[in-house]
Image (cartoon, rainbow, N blue to C red; front, side, top):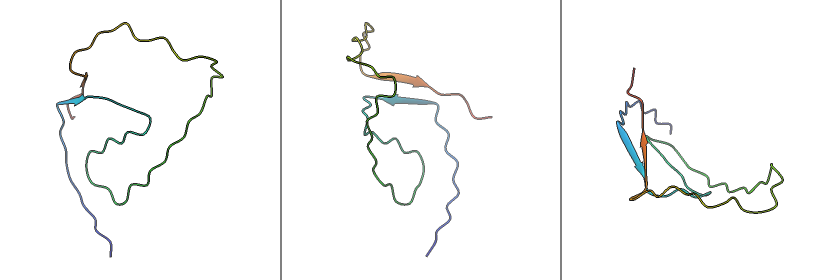
Length: 68
């Protein structure tokens, strides 16, 4: 059985507390989400990146564009 769902979502601001390699951000409806985790060193880096010097309280605030 197939379901076809049409929806409109308007997001004015989205606050993301943390993000990891295995995070999934879903907005809307989907069928089955199949997990996939890959780790690739495409830049041939030999050591971890330096820590960020930015001090952000309460997570990241990501402004989104208004819908057209």
